[in-house]
Image 1 (cartoon, rainbow, N blue to C red):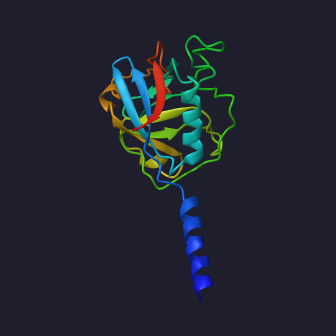
Image 2: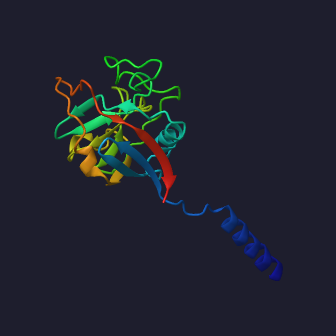
Image 3: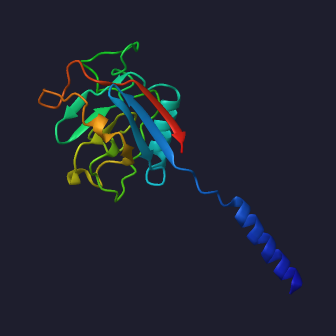
Amino acid sequence: MKLLHLAFAGLIALASMMTPALAEDQFLTIQLKDGPVVIKLAPEVAPKHVAQIEALASKGEYDNVVFHRVIEGFMAQTGDVEFGKQGGAKFNPQRAGMGGSEMPDIQAEFSKVPFKRGTVGMARSQSPNSANSQFFIMFDEGPFLNGQYTVVGQVVSGMEFVDKIKRGAGSNGEVSNPDKMIKVTVGKK
């Protein structure tokens, strides 16, 4: 009986060592022309998408990327590191929004987290599994997106700066002479 008790205690100790510690909150900070926007990332909701955003931000890929599609009352879209990076080798304002990154597309991680003001979601094509580097920040609620797009985070400060992003005038929110993400960093709080 004592041997069984010791074996059980050893299993409990081993299990506690294998249980990961609770992760600290992860944040993405986007420096805009008017000030910083801080986004609390949601790796518990969309771990693969958050990991890809963090990897791209850590390499400076999002720096100087334009907000190519901005629709009043809806959202501001950015993140095309291929064609939307001012100063980049392939920068092309007419193609901004059509590219991604050198990393692979990500399988959808849909959740029950609703799209509301300040929610950050991954942009994609018609295919649910086509998200790569582009994302958008909601100006208002968007219940029609719920369960259809992957939520990766929520703005926790600086929404007043998001509200100042230049809006698009085109039929699909295309922006001429767009605002950009000056610097994007990732970190813990």
